[in-house]
Image (tube, rainbow, N blue to C red; front, side, top):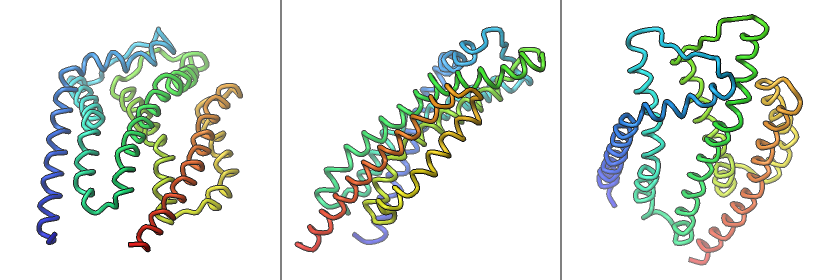
Length: 244
C-alpha cells in the first residue's frame, strides 16, 4: 500500500476515534451530575462532616466538563482500540492477529481493575489520612474545594488505571526484545522497596502501608509471568518468519 494510502487510512481512523471520544464526552456530560455523586462517595465515607464547596461562579461548569472528558475517554476506549486494531491488522502475522483481541480485552480489564482498586481502596485510605491531619491536628474547618478534590480524585483513578497496565507493557517490551527476563528479575528487589515507600507516602500506619504495597508487588510478579509468555511468543514468531 502506498504511503498516501496509509496516511489516508490513519486519518480516517483518527477521525472515527475523535468522533467516538466526543460522543462519549457528550453522553458523560448528560450524566455528569450522577457521576459527580459517585465521585463524592470516597470523601463522604472517609469524613462525612466534610463539605465540598465551589470557589468561583464558573467552577461548577468546569468541574462537569472535566468529569465528562475523563469519562468520555474511558467510554470511547473500546472504539479507539478497535480503530487501532483495524489500522495495524494488515501488517500483523496470523498468530499476532489472534493475540491482539485477547490482549486488548485484557488491557481494558486491567484498566478497570486499577480504577476500581483506586476508588474502593486507595482513595478512602488516602483521604482519611490527608484530611485527618487538617481536621484533627490543625483543627481546620472541614471545607474542601470541589475543583481540587475532583482533580485529585481523577488523577488517582486514571493513574492507577494506567499503572495496572504494567503486565501488558512488560509483555510487549519483552516480546519485542527491549527488556529481558533477567533484567526484570534483577529489578524486583528495587521495585519492592518502591512499592512500600509509595504506600508509606500515602498511609502512615504499617497495616495500610502493607495493604497498598502488596497489590503493586503482585502486579509486578504478574508482569514477570506475562513477560515469560511474551518471550516464548517472540521466539515462536521468529521461527515462523524463518520458516517462511
